[in-house]
Length: 130
Image 1: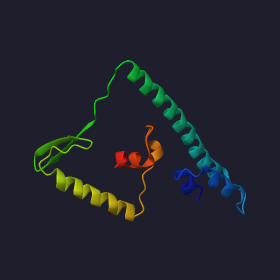
Image 2: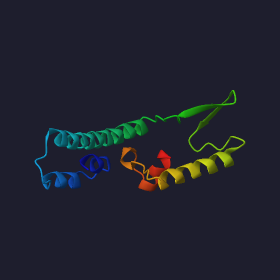
Image 3: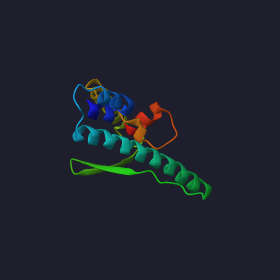
Image 4: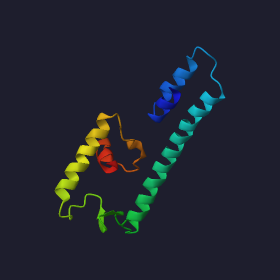
């Protein structure tokens, strides 16, 4: 349970659970908890540094190029980037992708939006991760 709560970012709940356990928490429990505490600190540090780097880049007029991906289907290599609609079957591709995302959510998957180091809404973060 400590691992599950930690993965969900519910550190207060995990700590409360540890303190209320019927048995004395051992080193494994505390190590599991501390991993998520450290992860949260690193995330905050990354977030602060990412904001600083973005400001410096903007100030200096530096623009980041979009990342690209390639997929090979039937000996043909297709190149694309995020939200690219240039492929002749883009409608079908995005429809299929949307269905896959819906199926994964029905199976219990949820995006960890706190890993997106941009100052945007959680909905936009989830869309970016998708």
